[in-house]
Amino acid sequence: MSKGNSKRHIKLLLKNLCKYYQEAGGKIDILDNIDAEFYQGEVVALVGKSGTGKTTLLNLISGIDNPDSGEVWIGETLITGLSEDQLTLIRRNQVGIVFQFFNLIPTLSVIENVALPSELNRLGSNKSRLRAQQLLERVNLGDRLNSYPDVLSGGEQQRVAIARALINDPDLILADEPTGNLDDETAKEILDLLLSVARETGKTMIIATHSLEIINYADQVYTIHNGKLFSE
Image (cartoon, rainbow, N blue to C red):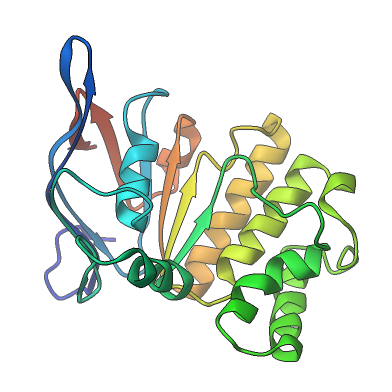
């Protein structure tokens, strides 16, 4: 896939994005004037050691955190400066998030966990559960619909989390160290699943990881170093 083709649709745009923290010794720049374009249907790897700012960048993209300056555009929408209610709707409809620690609700069954974001979108319980069942079958958990998270393996819980991220059919998927808590074999299975989902559905996916294996599969690879974003 050629990069920088202006005819392709830009799904995510970052402009002069900055984030810093105040410590006793002064200001610590986490992200310093980040500029980047991500295109519809691309798989993007964001690699680097822990603590370099990968999670911070994903949090800014999703609106979970706010930049100190700069802009985040998702499609034609400038999300920087939106209210928390508006950002919640953006995340619910346009962004799917896969976390390292799964973030499943322990008191809900597998199918209830997956269907919940759709029900919050007022799709209706029956339609939400049908969509959830289809997605769980897609991630090979069609036989665990009524199980609870505490009886699932780490890999199975991450598959549930992936299905949940897809339930509202977002164009943009953010995966933050999605294999960080998994053994090597299970991590490869989850990575393969994420990549196949992105390729089959044409979604833009940004995967933050310390694993270099994904470099061989990504359309774009970025590294954060000393607050700067470098294209590989």
